[in-house]
Every structure is written in structure tokens, then in C-alpha cells.
Length: 274
Image: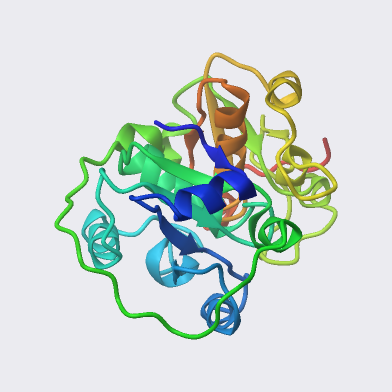
């Protein structure tokens, strides 16, 4: 697995190289499935293609939560359509410090599908503009398709039944207000999984929307022999896993169903407060 982040200067240099990375725009807005493509169409990093949270990085919502993993076959088809193969570097970006689909795409490509060279653009589109670079507009011709069939690593994620059968520390990436059950703007039930600790994904970033230094993250992130990351629907939890990668710490496993799946069974316990 490659270094998880890339800077604006490194990206500009890579895009001018003999083998430029496949650049994927992962911007998204929860509650508006069309927003990501619209944002990409209006203005995007030169040479980028759109990668959609709801259509490409998740299966249909249902008993598995709001953003369950897509089937292996569906995700393989997405990767092939975008021309992704192990020998082609991949760079992902969004406009929220990687907290939404960029981190989810990184986890699905690097951790689940096992692509060896996937990085998230630290700071995303704001860092690109801050470096004095320009954006492009409109559509692009489709890339040449690949024939890559990944060997998926299903041991990198857990099903809901596995949460009660082990001693892993559950790390909740949602805000502290949602964790405590004081506010729940998305899901119908407030609270958290009993025994979990709260580490909001925002705490992984500086006020400028970039990842904190590795040493600082290593000192701050919850530590246990085994860690499982979750959130509302398995998206920002990937930001937690990415933060562990930046810190050089062993990677947590992902609970993709997260809170939105946990609460679908009224027999499962719910905790509030700290």
C-alpha cells in the first residue's frame, strides 16, 4: 500500500509525468444524490473523472444501512469502466477534507480491492486552488476500460453479527452531539453502539481542512489491540481508517452498515451520553 496522502505540488508533478494517475472527483452531498456530478461538471481538477458515492461506492440502501458496500461485481465493473488497474496510480479528492466519498473510495480501492497505489489529495479542491492551479469544466471522453478483477479482502470489514462476538474497540466517527444522542439529523434513532468511543472525523483535520501531522494523529487516535470504525452509514468511518494510515498505526476494520444498520433491529441495545 502506498503513502495515503498526496500534496498539491506532488499532484501537479504527477499529472505531468509519463504515467499520470487516474484522478477521481469524489465530491458528494448527503441527501442530494445528484450534487456530486453537478459539482464535477461545473468545475473539476484537470483530467479528473467523477466517482459517485451513492451510485458507485454503495449498494442500494436497505437492511444493510444507508450506504452498504456494493457487490464485488458492481464495484469491479466501476473500476473497469474507469480504466483502473494495479499498474495505474489513483488519486482521489473531494472538498471536505476527505471526510465523505474520497476516504470511502480510498478504503474500497486500497483496503478492500487491494490496489497498491491509491492516495487522497490532502486538502482537496481547495488546496488545488490555494496552490494557484486552475480548474476545468464540462464532460470528458470515457477512459479506456480495464480488465482488472480485484482479489477482495473481506477480512477488512465486519458484519453486524461480529460486533458482539469479539473484544474490539468500536470507534464512532460521528459528531459528539450525535454520539451522545443529543441530535440526530439523519437517522430515526439517536445514540451510539454500547461500549463505543467517540472520535469525530473532523478531529483528524487542521482548521485548514488538511490532515494533522502523523505524530499528532498517532498520539490522539484511540488505541486498542483491535479497532473497528463505524459512523452513520460507513462513509466517514473510512476517514478514521485513513487517519490511522496517515499515523502509521495498524488499520481498524470497517463496519459498513454502521449506525443506520444497527438501529434497524429494535432488539439491539442503544446507549446515550458519553
